[in-house]
Picture 1 (tube, rainbow, N blue to C red):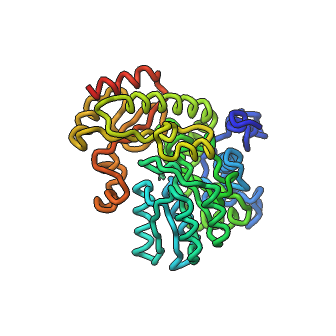
Picture 2 (cartoon, rainbow, N blue to C red):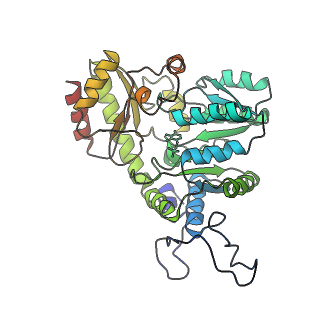
Picture 3 (tube, rainbow, N blue to C red):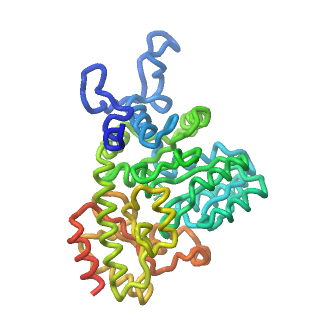
Length: 380
Ligand SMILES: *Cc1c(COP(=O)(O)O)cnc(C)c1O
């Protein structure tokens, strides 16, 4: 099956009982048993097993080409559960540009149970390979493209080095989505998603997911999904499934519009620099062409005049709502240092190149001419 077909049919079949083409939203927390311990197909309690969630999980697994997937109440719920699979004192090597909440969680795990996370600029895979050769790392955590600097990690090279070092390679694929990038095909072990973003696609649900290359890892985490309990509700599962059905259509429009906005920004004299993997000026444009089949809908930029210029610009936009989050059909814009990434200390942000004036665009699927006009008008 090709992607657009997979998004509609992968892991999904008409309801066997009625033929309903949409999966029923089973609003139940428990199931009647025939005799004590005698359940119908293992359905005993909804945290453990839920039919609407199972369809979402099968769909997610099909999209990423995995051996199984698990759905969670949020992206961070997925990460929390994943971190619980590590033993005390484990070492993680993470890329140094990360979603703010991901960084906050790694640092919390350091303080509470001694998880040792080291952050490394992963744009040069050789640096990662050298680091891993020293040994002792249990998990390598990549976000690619990163939030918000849109840096790339070479998934193939870093996954191979992780395997040699006996570490699990994890990729946060929230920005690219499986439509543009399939980390498991490139050798990664686990894919993480905030389904809140492009998979849901309509800014109406918060959710997360993990997808696994190997059945054994899936089984281990499935046990933890139930034990830790960060599961999504049935209606949330349905909303993510509904979003998934149009993922290809939306991602093509997001990428086309993002490229138009990125080019307009780059050509404007008031813009200092534009970060978009699809631009030839992006330092990893070649790698982007290799490991992604498109460049996504996220664009970051710095204006001349820093934070003050950014604030003025943000106040003048019409179609881009000033809001956290991303990946919905409507265009959003934000200042990461003051919003999504505020949980990273300023000194740490600056070390990574995340300036106070940086602006992050989540380019929606409106008419690209309107979006370009809006941005150009606001630059004045
Ligand atoms: C939003 C986001 C997360 C966290 O997901 P939630 O659903 O908000 O918990 C993780 N990674 C990336 C790249 C994100 O953008």
